Image (tube, rainbow over all chains, first blue to last red):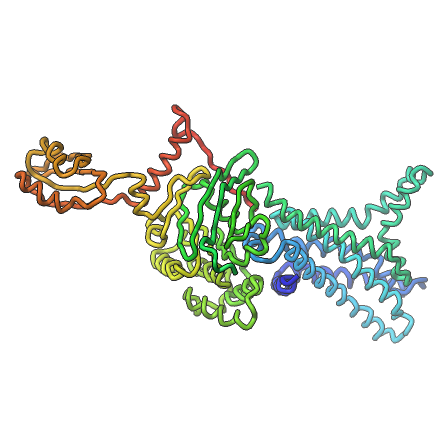
Length: 253
Length: 341
């Protein structure tokens, strides 16, 4: 792990120098601000049961679909296309360190961007002057969910980037994978065939993958270790596949 | 560092297949500490593949490669400390400054922070990059980028430097700088360079390996190669007199001396003759004494040495001929495609 921090700081630096990071950040903040404004508008019209923070996080998948690919598509695919992956792999740094370094940088940036949305809640609190709108519990739960689920989503983006030399292919591939991950289980669980008794196990497995349920639990303060294990082990798996993806490309010739 | 090993690079029976295509077939050679070795071969001969295997970037299909006595296949993380590598076309990240790039690479190669700053100054000085140290890599000229690549390769003072076509695309002035740089490494680091520019190899390298179709077809110093491939020395002489009697007379000087080619005689009676001999010693003086004594007049005599280019062409042609069945000469194509990553 000696080289992890060297690569991490180098990657953070190059992410900060890359245009696609800023495009992702601007798009993200715009979309989130728009969503937040819509939620507030709904609140002014009709009284709501949940605090605005809980509603806000329900749409978290929307920015995930475009922001994660934009942040991660460049990482390995671009190095492969430029040929700098070859010089990187001939240094004493191992493939795992390289992949982890790139993952770490993208993940930190992802979390940082989400962190900037805390400003919305602060502004609301500042102008509304009503302690009820800034309920810290769903906020903490929501942001913890973002941090935990982000591990998996960013790792999936890195994995897509490790498979190809084209940024566009990596971006589209990770977008598709993320869509499948976030809304695939809810599609599956809606199939009535799964309600059959013989599919009980499958139904349970699919239900436990429901991202909306995870989010609901987190924002209500229910920290289920199974969910945390799902995201952490899923991200570890995606990163292992990324390492294999980088190395397998060398074998096939 | 394993300083005691005499050979820094040992390659034994190396084989590399890309699917059904054999890129390298049974390649064996070794390089001494401080030796500069040139790798020559036509496109697709397996030069870049060999270099990539030496760096530990590509795995070999079979065979053994040892860097400073350590096997690359089982200890890639250790051998990479001993290797400085500059790939073909020298890819560099476009968004870094020269000094930042060297710092990043130095840290990856685990040069201690305290030493790295001084070392970067040294290599910048050595590669004449001091003026551009704060420039962005993407905006540098090709020659400067090439020098940045060399600076990066020698940064951590590895025992082995591997450079794939370091002088490709450079102007003569920059080639001279790069050549001096490589010559400056002699005795300290083992250097393997591949190049298409044959005079370049001849000037900088102690030893030349000519590979074709994934095999070594000739190796040795340029002079040894000339002798091995051509096995003869040739002289060009402009002589006037009875040229018909020349072949028999020459036998008296040396039994193997013969007229290889005889040009048309000019109006002044002088004709150019090419003489060849398997004799090792220089026969020039004896020719100058003997021929006038026999009534010939000599206007010019020169010793013609085949260039490395001739050696290269002869050696690769010889290897094609040996590999191809009769009747199929010149049609075979064993070019192994280099993988694109």
